[in-house]
Length: 383
Image (cartoon, helix red, strand yellow):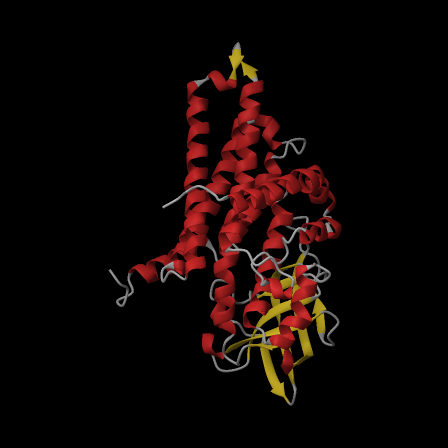
């Protein structure tokens, strides 16, 4: 077992780090304050291959591994957690089309997503179905060569701005087998968007409802067969959970680095804060939790890349642990800054606000425990 990154992975990591420090970090506070969706910066990231990280090269993607993606998202998130998190969702949606679309769908949609000429959103959650995703109600009824869609999706990142909406819709009976996946294009008659949500964090990406009123979607836009939608959605989320966990690592690492610098500069009671053993121990615990979380994310990414039968459980474990640890580390870093940590002049409060939602989305951390327990208690699980 080798815990060392190879030369190519170190180069990928370095490219992402340099980009984040140059393009994301200097602007992150302004994007947050003014609620700017940084289209130009995202397209610059796409020019480096970061918009289709594990999309195949034939469609303009980078053809990299899930571990490579984890390295990239951690580095990008040290610059701006919120913007990196949107990019992670875009990557998930692009991969779903590349993986499950037919040749015509892939050629039509994926290259423009890989270049970020077009932006993508993932639409699963509804006002009445969050954790119980298989209970979704938005219905698509087949009429000739179209589906007529009615209903709504909630908490959709990029809604109103994105060009492509990868939507899970009910085409059959109740439960997961009645769900199909349709790609809905912006400008489709009957597609509308709700008001822009006012959020605690993630302010550099718009969030709103996606609404369908007799929305006519071509049947040619269906990914896979009818009834495949829930499986497609869950497979997308395995990678999405790793990506968002990696974004938590990046936010936590930035917070830890800020705290370490602050302890070395701030003096109280006649000596630097870094000289107090109690604070040294807190810093050590933060670093240990961060490293443990990173190792879990890397292991889960390797499991997904290799097709390990426990990959889904590993992804759930990594997402649960890394997002909990990420928030705790940001919170501790803010505490170590004292009153200054609470001010917007310092980035700690933004890191805290941005990573908090990672414990909720891509499946709440409570649902991660359900997934883990279900796998552990499965009667057909090997020894």
